Image (cartoon, rainbow, N blue to C red):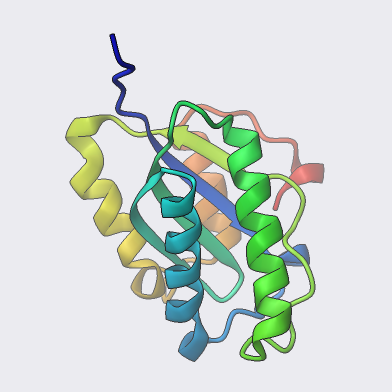
Length: 148
């Protein structure tokens, strides 16, 4: 028997101190790089999006990977790539930690749309406000000392 699964995960992480160092013109290239990382780890990237200081990944996580290992790989690899790339001159580090939530299969289109429309979304709401709202919606108690 084989292993069958569908594990949609919405992952969110920010730049160190939420500094806006992900230029508008270069983010699409960053998203493509991370999509390649996902595929190389046998994870299907449904959508990658974000704004100037954070990213959202909506992926199907392969069962051979622990979530923490996957996030570490993405953050470490993308950090090194951005420092070498030249299109992210102000980028220094990703912030420690991340948020991750499972997404019901029936809600995937809504989640894809949400991740895809981050630029539009953040014309009206800051990342910090968005993050707090998501934590509240997911019934996660947050410690203000560790906000991304």
